[in-house]
Amino acid sequence: MTGKKMRALVFYGPKNFKVEEMPIPQISKDEILVKVKYAGVCGTDNRIYQGTKKINPPRITGHEFVGEIVEVGKNIKEFSVEERVTVYPMISCGMCYACKAGRKNICTNRITIGYEIDGGFAQYIKIPSIAIKSGNVIKVPENLRDEVVAISEPIAAAYHGIKRCEIKEGQTVIIVGAGPIGLFHTQLASLNKPSRVIVIEPIEEKRSLALRMGATDTIDPINENVLERVLEITNREGADVVIIDVGIPKVIEDSLAYVKKGGTFLVFAGCPEGSRINIDPNVIHYREINFTGSSASTPEIHREVLELLSAGKLNVENLISEILPLDKWQQAFEMKNNYIGIKVLIDPWME
Ligand SMILES: [Zn+2]
Ligand SMILES: [Zn+2]
Image (cartoon, rainbow, N blue to C red; front, top):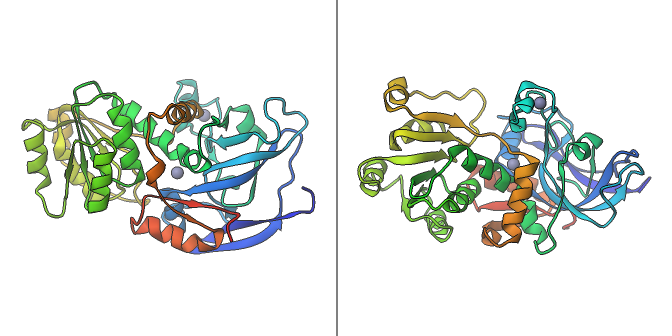
């Protein structure tokens, strides 16, 4: 690949990206080169675009991707050319207290492809040796379409959140927000056989999608009294688990009232940096609410998700709403920003 060029989307600052022609990255003997087929656009990519998540420019962003290995360093034994892979983007150090406690998704020294290392909004991506050594490069089951694999990373993040909630059979679950993550949560929560999965979402189309994904009830927060509906559906108790899938502080404040005594409240979505919420701490205290968060995932969970997809246990095909070329980056991020569509993919080879 020496001397050959590729096209990539480069971040220079908020709202300032450029599609550039640049040399295809050269790999060392401990690295691999992947030809990117699709890369997913994430809420975090939008936050980088908006400037509410800071990363250092210049950087090729994009942390959700699938591709084919086109070059393998001579020290690499476990991968070969033409293999289809996805890469779990967050690389943990293995040394810090979080890693040692088995919680590598919150590694204190974590680095992420697409944030600190060049990512997948490009025709080719070099996978650093640390990612290969830490098991972040994952071979893809043959029966999965590229588009589906491209959205497996956010499903892994969603699945980690579901595991954090320890949903038991017969419990009631509320999912606030039916964007891609909310819809993944709806399906993943259903695997634990809850009695009710209630999805709160203002957009009608997304509410009906949620019903197709396994929601038992939906609530329109614009035209309905959400708390009243929640109490009605949950036998006046509130839900065992409430999952927040929208990064809006006010929504977090309002949603605390939906969880029952002893229940779990999970903040999954990231909010703009510096956000504040205003809640009565007594609600957490007297009601013994397990108020918690979920961030990223692990390569192991990502593998598990690929197996679930391969076994047909999740239905995500109709959640891919748009595939755009690199040049349409602005449209891609704006769609995310305005909650248009579900999952948007970038095809770096599309003209
Ligand atoms: Zn993401
Ligand atoms: Zn660590």
